[in-house]
Every structure is written in C-alpha cells, then in structure tokens.
Length: 129
Image 1 (tube, rainbow, N blue to C red):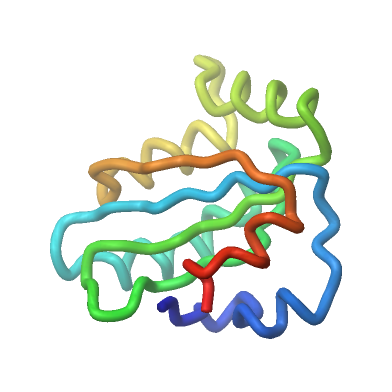
Image 2: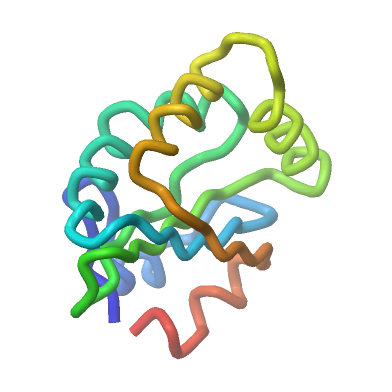
C-alpha cells in the first residue's frame, strides 16, 4: 500500500488517466529511518524540475505505508533512447540541474531498487493498490 504525495495523483487517479510515457522507471527508494518525508518534499520542490530537464517526467511519488524509510517513485520516459539519454545525464560529470539533484538526493537515499516497465504493466500490478 502506498500514499500519494501532495504533488502527484493517487493510484486510482493514475489508472483513470493515460500515462504519457513509453517506459516507466519504477524505483523503490530507501532512506534512513524517518527521512522519507524530507526526501519526498525535496523531490517535489527540487527534483522534479531537474528530472524534467533530463527528459524524465514524474508519474508519481508515494510513501510506502507503515514504513518511514521507503518511497515509490515512478518516472516516465519516452522510449529506450530516452532512458539512454536520461542515464547518461544522471551519471554525467558536467554540472547540471540533474547532477545537483543527484548529489542532494544522496543526503537521504541509501539505496534504490529499480524496474523498467511499460505503463500498462505497472498500473495493473497488485503492489499499487
């Protein structure tokens, strides 16, 4: 079970609208205990603009219920080329908004489990009720 952030639709809202993405990056984000709220707040304020500049759109950001150290973050990308460009920007060395967000994110995030899915698959999974 997940709880939506104030800046994203809940799961029912996502299912009701069509997700404009060819691929969805599904990340289970782990932070130190008690830090997930601060991370999600910063993602909403700072992370989303940096992600957009790198070609990713935030589909959703959710707190995992009964956990104070986990969030589910869903990023939409156009296609395989889009994910390649995004990963190049994520791991790039040049100064950019995405690099600054990645460094800021590292103050909270201790690990991520990532899946790459097609939108129709993640919206029908039992993990997202």
